[in-house]
Length: 87
Image (cartoon, rainbow, N blue to C red; front, side, top):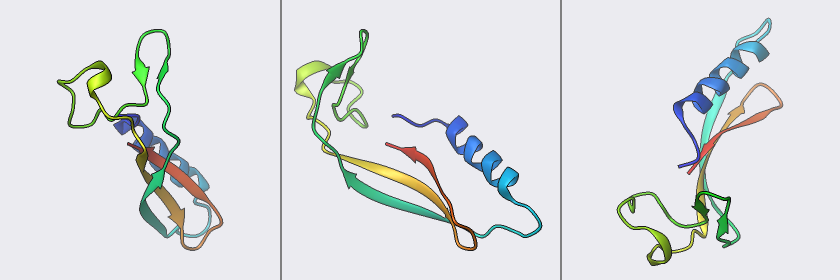
C-alpha cells in the first residue's frame, strides 16, 4: 500500500489553507488506472507486484500489478485537483 492516513490528513490541511473568503466544495473521485507492468528492486524491497490481500505470499508467486486505484480530491467551485492516495 502506497498511502497512509498521513496523506489523507495532508489533503485536509491543503484544503483548509486554500479556503479563503468562500467555502470550498469538494468531490472525491475514485478511479482505476492502467499502469505499466514493471518489477523493480529498490535495494530492500521488490515493487511492482500485487501485494494487497496477498501479504502471506512473497516473491515470484505474486502477479505483476497492471492497475491502480486512485483517490483524487477535486473542487467543484475551484480550479484544482489533489491526489489523496493510490493503492
